Image (cartoon, rainbow, N blue to C red; front, side):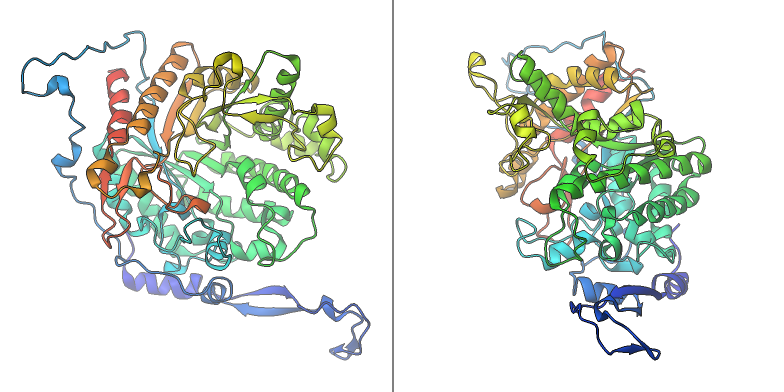
Length: 589
């Protein structure tokens, strides 16, 4: 149960409003010796001055972000039964009672396919994208709060995460709606800034109470809770203090955050993901927007690998700690990327494909599942500016996952750069450097230059419905990075032009997304029939939400959310029924 308002007030006064000393560098850039004194002692370089500044959570918001929008609903909404009318799937003409004379070919079930009884049919969401309640109950600001409020044009439609789906207060109804559709697993992320408003220091008991109730609500509806510790919402103070994932200090702070989460929720949460898509974090979020954060003088192209090194170490430490606190748990990180298909059968394209794997999945999978170290191609590049992993670090990293978790949306072709791989590797100004693998979503001339599959919304140019490549994808993972099981921790589709539609009935018919889920579930069944142990499918996403820099301009949700209405009402789309019906048809009885 959620705690009372009286208890809330007491906890807020002693935790989230607690003030701590933080160091801030003086803004002066002078390097000349001066006569300034500190406690009577001359200081030669005033630019090195630091001071202890008392900062509250509200101060952080005022300094970093400023005013935020607040939803109409600011208390927890109790779940109500889902109306039976909402659970009627799109009509199938073969079952329509009139008029007579219809001719509909029967699609037969493949009796050799099945989902195991223990298969997790799930959905996924991320705290910053769905929760809203930006400044509520002691939450601190994240880098996304700052960037979306402060950096012009950071979001395509100038949106913010202030309200989004208001899931922070509507989670009970959201979970009830998942259960009504037959979902048995919910992958959500915990906002680091709700547990540690400053990123480190005091723990916010209001944040603990909130996620306790999210977890308990899942269990109430027989839904398995799966928690992600970090889905991109870096505490703003840690980013400005030591560069977030660029600072070695992040390993200790992240591990302490993980310790609190495991300790407080591990009695009920047995499925954990430490970090979501480290590849995207390091390659797309660093460097931070210039002029809005402290500059740590790491060259831009090197920042992603400094980030990657610290993420690997933080993940490994959090994994080892988690297994000691919750020994009966399953812990992994979430890798991501599409299947990589050679454009031709040339040896040059094969080499380009391997480099693409190395600088994407292999960058994190090789150390965890194979060697404790990066692929040789990555090591060749980073050796000039990063220290190698020590033997002790390799030992901690290797084996730090209980399964292979992958956000597997699509596929694309790879080929050698026009000037060749060697020429690219020798030229750091080449836009393909350092991976030096070119890519396309189009077959070659011999195949008629067709696209690899129907394209998603134009604002997601990386996504095509390439589900026919999925079994080969799973076979590659299963062979290359052996693991007891594979979980598909995100997959989904952005229906073209959906955000521009205005008629509800048109929005709810999402034919390409529906066919994507149908074909994807068939592809999982094929992989299962081939002996690949896939234990979960977690669809992205269970509601329309804030799609990071794209804002609300593209939609991935299997439920429509009316963002123009204060109630933020939800409606199931056809794709949700297709997704769950495929499971119901094939799950072992």
